[in-house]
Amino acid sequence: MASSSSRWRPRWVRHAQAHIEFWGNCLAEALPFRRPYLHWPPTATVTLLSSEPEVQYVALRNIELILRKYPSILSQDIRVFFCKYNDPPYVKLEKLEIIVRLTSEKNVEYVLAELKEYATEVDVEFVRRAVLAIGRIAVKLERATERCISSLLDLIKTKVNYVVETAIVVIKVRPSHASPG
Image (cartoon, rainbow, N blue to C red; front, top):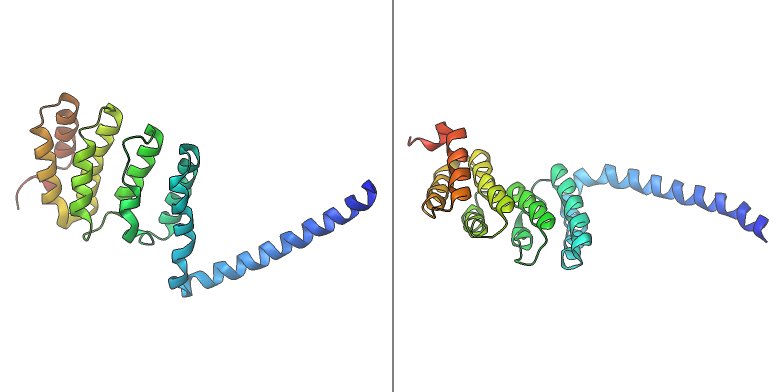
């Protein structure tokens, strides 16, 4: 019996691999022309964000890869990536990267409000990354630069040492964006 199952197994594996390769090639060819159907795979992955932190991390890394290829595919779902108070630090940092990637002219106001909220957290590294994210958004969206600078100036007013230091660094790195017109 063991010998008969070993004969069937390689044939089955080859058959499955051929189907996967065929349908994968068909999907790759069809994707550029069928953009309306692109919404389902990331949405299915987004549902994993309500799982355990380890699963969330893997889902976030995969979403990051999808967003590199299709940057606007989840632009309507940015609030899903806002950090929760009980997210572990590694999940928060991944969510922060995705938030910066998904920020657009349409959602910059509530993203900046969220990032300013993150600046009040206890985790120093996360706070610094959140402040740096405001600077990255200023560079990414030139029309939002003044709003980003205003947010950074508000953070400087908090007088929390590491927040002030990071905000000043962000402003000094991009002096052309910091100076008024």
